[in-house]
Length: 64
Image (cartoon, rainbow, N blue to C red; front, side, top):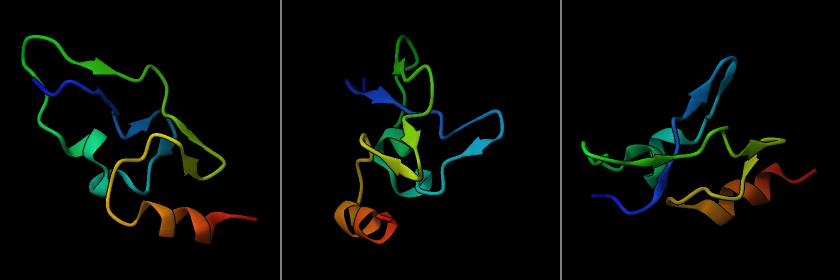
């Protein structure tokens, strides 16, 4: 079992552009029980829960 809270990667009209590189999206789910975020943790183009390669680089380019 992946003992993390996973992310669906999209919800309604919101589609996370980082999901394919994020472990919370790509990790294999446990077939018997898996926790997921209720809402996408993506806010203003950033995700405090992103778990992947180049996380710092992604957010430094998104700052306004």
